[in-house]
Length: 302
Image (cartoon, rainbow, N blue to C red; front, side):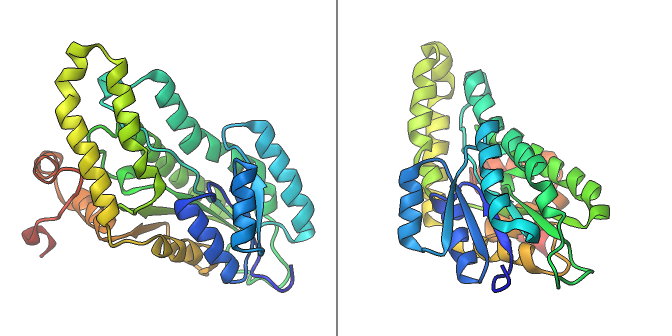
């Protein structure tokens, strides 16, 4: 441990933002434990960078979290854990009238309940201050990857927004609880980024519509499918790259005074401004006009 910047566990590291961040942090000198759910994903990560140590962890299963904790505690020993990055996530898209209860539960389990279980399990390792660490800096860091949807709920993302708003509220409460214990809590708020999560929306949308009575599904079908298509296209065309998210996470893990929130990408920053300055009715109008994207009017930005 003496030749690294500390040990970090990041969940959801098999693809997308999690994989990019795991490789980025390993390149920056961290001892990286990359949480994945399948051995095939673990093997792929080992081949990509042998400095990354994959750890099988299902964030919805208590026994899997406990097994990951035992493995990591044995590896880090008295040095403890520098950071826990709660990145694992899914995105359920559905009109709320058509939202299956099991889909809502799955969204909350992965995005909200799982991180709570991880935090509770790993906090003792995060409270250990490594020898030689600056006393004014946090002993350990919790970084919760949320979304701009955690500030502004978009139509057909009710389940996702509920989970992200919950994650933000949890993070705010946790930050205030852990400040006296010198453990920091930061929220990463990526905007649209082209990752595999968005490619699954269309398949999920068709499944939700097929399961609903035709007379109800027909009320939503055209607008819902148009929204899913626009959302996917916006993510694919986004100029925000996974590397920008990884850089924000690195800052939250290393800064002496890490920020409480890190909006990443022009759209996420626009949402942060819009929700602070615009009344709800105007936000509704802007969203109806622009679809899943939010553009702050120039006169407001001025």
